[in-house]
Image (spheres, rainbow, N blue to C red):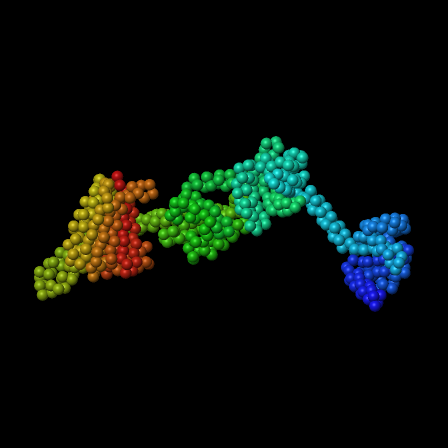
Length: 607
């Protein structure tokens, strides 16, 4: 029973051993007397056999690479005598198809079927060796790339340089051994480096892969080298390190500096130019001079620079402006002045003319420089000249017409009065005739006023006294029409050189028009104050009513003869007033809108 039990246990142990050996991932090969007596499944696959039967009983020599075949017998004999496991020198095996398998082999002396034998544990290292060779190739590739790349490369660890490529060493004028082991701060601006190291990338490095930087470097000869690059955290020799790549951008820096100086020079020149200048790029405003800021009503360019140009262009002119700018960019010729409209910050629309020219290199960009001219004064001057010409023509006409009309008019009026006394029953008709004759006489008198030369001597006049006198004259008429005249002097008014009677005639006309524009009653506000306009001192008088207003189509024509909103008006009163104000070197401006009233602004220079 004991022998059967031992045989059973031995067979069971052998079966477990066989199962373990056959399922091992490493090849197991046993040879005795240089013949193969056992192979597991992994060894069968490794040697390219279909089954173990193809290998059992075969001599082991054909499976050993020729590089090791001559050592085989000697090694086996020494190995068996030593009686202890060793790592075999057989690094290559030959498969049945003749291909080579690179291996790692461990040999163990055993007894197999009562005979001395050698058990080889074979691990296929082909994949590992290929991987190792690939890694070596990549290492060589990376090393070659870093050594020959046209950029400086360094590795800093624990505050000192542990690697620098030749390009960086040459960039700073040193030898490699002069920089290895030294601190980074020794070769760059220390204050700038300390500021960089306070960045979160160096302090915490929460997931930031790269950190771009610009810093001044120190060349060995003492000159400054401007550096620009990127840095990232890596593992070097098992420890955390900083990998940096840098480029010498000294020439770029000098070029940018030169461009900046040129731009500042342009700006200084343009700032002193007497006309508004605007520089734009891709519809964005890059620069405006002082006159351009004054034109749009701003004192600081920070609220204009960077904004869209078309925000200031009238919506009806944007397409034409866009076409002109595109044409300017495409050619190298300036455009002629063209009229347009811009919208001021106050919302007021201003008529201007502008000419454009392209500049190839302003801060490294191709831009458009626009010269702008305010047409407001020119338009007003043209209107004044046209009006003056009309007045001159009318004056010449009036001189002849008034003289020719007045004599027969006097006769007609005398005979009308004579006939009235004779035909008392027809008094109604004579009253109408006398009224119409008086109206003709009034028109003739206004013609005579236009015909008279305005060369009356001017004397220092008190504007407050003139206005109070006019208000007192018209106050009674205003009360009868349920209109309140409110006069307010805002501050002390300086004296002005004037003809008081002529100015009174102007203010009577203007205030009377304001009163008559409110048949249902209302208020006329009259204010006077001193103010500075374009460097000169003026007295500004404003008359504002609450009347029916004037249609826009008539505003521009006011002051022309027989242009009026009154049923029986001639328009000559405002024409005479305009001529008087111009003779005093002043201006008169009328603003009005239907149902919103009318505002008349008069400005007269002070002494």
